[in-house]
Amino acid sequence: MARKMRAAEDYMHHLYVHMNDVDHFVIFSRLTHKQFISSAASFKNLLLVKHAYEEGSFNMHTQLDFISSEDFPNFSKTEIKGNLCLLDFQNEQQVDELTPIEQAELLYIGHKREPIASPFFQKLQNRYVYYAAPEDQMTKVYFRFLADVEQLVANLFNQMIKEKEGTGNFWRRKSAKQIPAIDANVLRSWRNYMKEGALLSLSKQEKPNSCYSIEIRTLIDYDFPDEVWDDLNDIIKQPYDELILIS
Image (cartoon, rainbow, N blue to C red; front, side):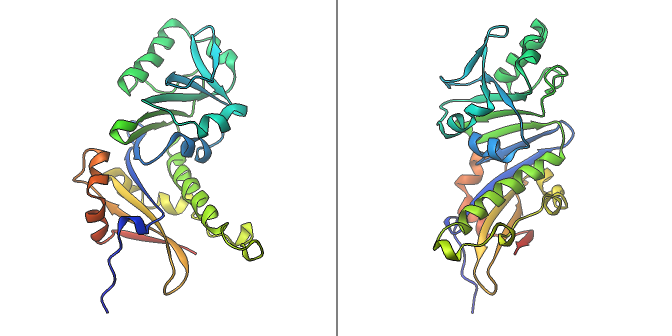
């Protein structure tokens, strides 16, 4: 019997990933600011360089808004219209020490989506620079540590699996130890696909054995993330390059 072709909506989530390991940035598509905040390594505050969020705190020195950790839940659930550029920092004193040149470099990133020199500021000790352009269905993230890339993706997919496993009768829910999870090191072994540009598709397979899986498809012919979603159903019909089983 021929295998039934799956449609894009048969999957739990699709994530486009294109890594530039030389310049330490990754282009994502279908990664929201809420998903970034909940999936990235922990940070204390977020400096808003470009945004349309009206409830942040205000730093007098830079005249930029920022979000403290206690405000993350409200910020995460707020729909941000327009482009969003932010980076993490530990305390406001670090921001108060930024020179006019460093502040100008921040504004340049917010305008051009790329740094003049390094996206990582010595005074801020930021781990990330995040830039989302919703109209282009694109999110660009600079990572100080490239190992954080796979950790972010693993955390994102593991949260989705937990949400999926948390449905149904209370007494039949699986304990935390029983919930399947993908290890970041497993994803790291397939980094070469991400360097080419890849679609990662998460799904739950019921047969022959109930498990979760991630299908990896390289997309070297796509230059813009929004084109991926236009052709998603056709892409899914193509054989995957790798299959990661999560049981």
